[in-house]
Length: 149
Image (tube, rainbow, N blue to C red; front, side, top):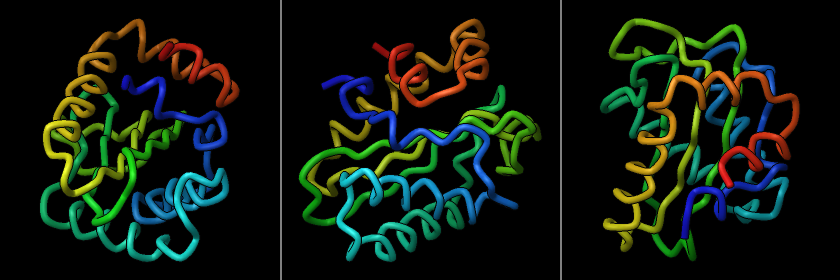
C-alpha cells in the first residue's frame, strides 16, 4: 500500500490555524478523527504518543519538512494526515528552517517494517524539490492527494 492510498483529502490541512507544532499535531490528529480514520476515543492516546515521540527526538527534517509519527497498539492500518503551512512552523528541524510540509503518521505498533517503508516513501518523494513546490502550491486536500497518486 502506497502513501497515496493512506492519505484522505479530508486529512489534509491547508494553512491550518496552529500557533506551534504541538497545536499542529493535535489539529492533524483531529483531522483523522473528523474523517473517520481514527476513532474519537483514541484521539488523546494518539496525541500523547505523538507528543512523546516529538519530545524524545524532533521529527523536523530539512528543506521545510517534518514527519511526526508514533506507533499505537491495535491500530488496523497506517493513518496519514498532512499539513501545508505556507509560512512554516518551528519544528527544531535539522537545518533550523521552519517546516512547511508536515506529514503525520500513526502506525500499528506490530508493523515495524511497514512503518519504515512508509517513512522511506514519504522522505523519498519529499526529497524532490519540484514535488515540494507543487505541494506548497496546492489549495485543497484533493489536489495534494492527486499529486501523491
